[in-house]
Image 1 (spheres, helix red, strand yellow):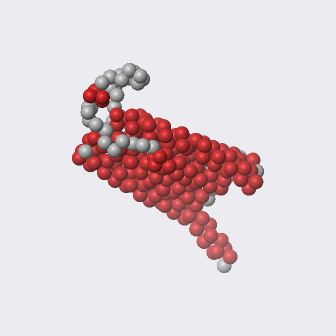
Image 2 (cartoon, chains in turn brown, blue):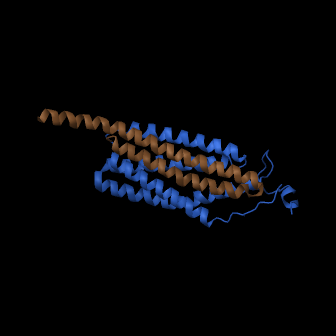
Length: 84
Length: 157
């Protein structure tokens, strides 16, 4: 009985690392979609109003930084969850 | 109105590209972000190193310093990217930022995986300091963005 429990615990530890990797991948995809949407909006806005390009790029970069934080935190969570 | 933009500016650093007002705005923003972030980031590293020392000893300090260096490198890479792509069209900046994002995430993943088995670095201190550093960098940059005066409309060249 205890051998079965130990085997299950070992298997759960193995699954944990894989799940952490999947979670990191999902987190990176979310941030990448966010970055794509941000720059798509900037391209659209610059095409409509080229005079505002500097303003729009500034807004885009700060949005990029904030979206990127999610991916970086996801990376750390992967690092912790995968059994650092 | 556009005469000022067309007039060559003597006191600007001579570059082979003409003066681009949009690029100047983005570079000024990047510089402001860097200036605003230096002090909070340094304080965060010092506080994390002290906390790491009490929590895990010397490996805790090593973890805090390593996380500070790695997170700062990632954020400085973004600022460098802002400088490099400031004069480009938005579609090229999109490509550069996405490429930079991919390079950064891959480099950080490799770094973190390489540090996972190292006994001299406390993993939990490293991870928590990394989160704190990323949040401090992002907050400082957002504050700098808020305080920097960016002209709404830059007259066409």
